[in-house]
Length: 116
View (tube, rainbow, N blue to C red):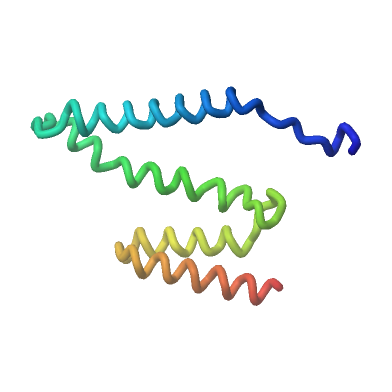
């Protein structure tokens, strides 16, 4: 095996430390909201800001897949870009989530079929 193809294995102790640390961090983050806040009423200004969380997270998850798709090796793909723009347009103008998803899906498959 050449050094270029060799994969360095992580030590089991280090792996368990990382896994336990991530698990503890995940638990503490959830406990901060569920255990500490629990049944308390949150202030109106915080609830107003929390309403925008899904609207901010979803584009942050989708944008890299449209701009740098792994299916094309990171090159901009006209089919995916067109499908994303159609999905956005349907969502903005018609305000129908399911229709926007289905429209984007249809455009993606039509563009992939058309372009080849």
